Image 1 (tube, rainbow, N blue to C red):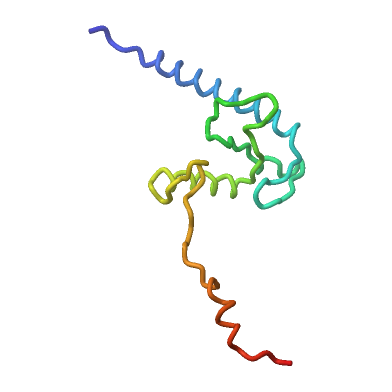
Image 2 (image 1 turned 30 degrees about the vertical axis):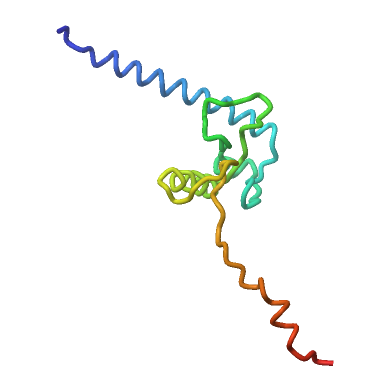
Amino acid sequence: MAPKDPSKLDRIVAEARAAAEKREQGYREQALKIYPWICGRCAREFTHANVRELTVHHRDHNHHNNPPDGSNWELLCLYCHDNEHQKQLELEAGGGQPGSDGKRGKGATHSPFADLKSMLAGKPTDS
């Protein structure tokens, strides 16, 4: 077996990182030109002074899906972006069952006010 060349592995890793950074810069710059600098979740506004805190979120969680019209992107602040990915991790870990639309399943099924009309029907009114 031939000895492995560690410099080759270092070169491959460096090239992969450079390609990822170039790809990210490409869609980030495009998204910042297309969309207003406002977080899509909390509506926090950004300026040139703090735009580094505004991230590009891929709606389908596929970082290779970068249509030029930006339809797979939304701008999120660092906090909302982290929260969005945490929700995805919880969903994948079984923290909620997705429906056919990809969203979490139904919440509570109990309706505390279902019988309110009949309960109020027998009460006298304040007139």
